[in-house]
Length: 258
Image (cartoon, rainbow, N blue to C red; front, side, top):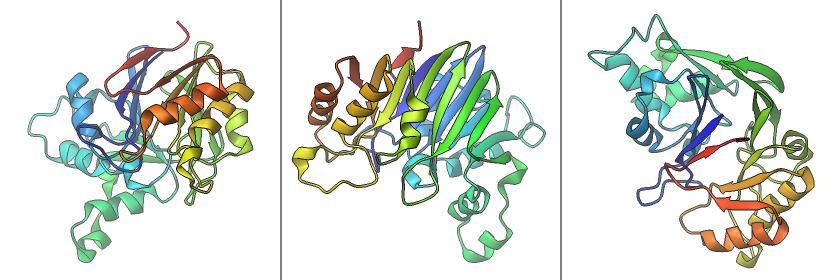
């Protein structure tokens, strides 16, 4: 199983830094987890977007799904697609409101919003807590702590596991998902030195503490906003977890369990 970072900027894109988007590959199948601002451009650097087998969206804040609008344009209007997108609709596993919320983001007016349905090129599947199979992966979803409906994921393939927190504050669901994972991809948006009150994102320290409690093999810190000191977030995570810790880097790839 291979993870490639398409975007890891938190809350909004930074300079030449797309928002959240992660490519997970195994057995020739490409799963993209989250599709925030700028992710489609980053994806095209390494893969034909028509090669993607499915999308998995943790929640519907724009920094995790905004580029679905651009992907809609590509799938509807590309003059020479490798296959007919209407006969081979892209599976999108997302929170229940995704069809209407993503249609509203795509439509340029209220009149067109009422008539917009993205079901011609996407096949929407409502996320619920539990385990489903997506391509070669077993994907376990759990609700996490965030202002909107949001999920964290445990993605397993041939005994190897990638856990993605999505956006979440500290909650028991993350400990359950992360237990014994080969790689924990944890958002961490702030540090305790910022004198910010705890919010519904993990801090660097909390990401490290989660990794320690769950006894993961590796911790990869992601979703750091452009206004936050990445090195300070990393330092907090390292202080709390004495295992392998690094910052996610755009276009970097990581072999999971190898």
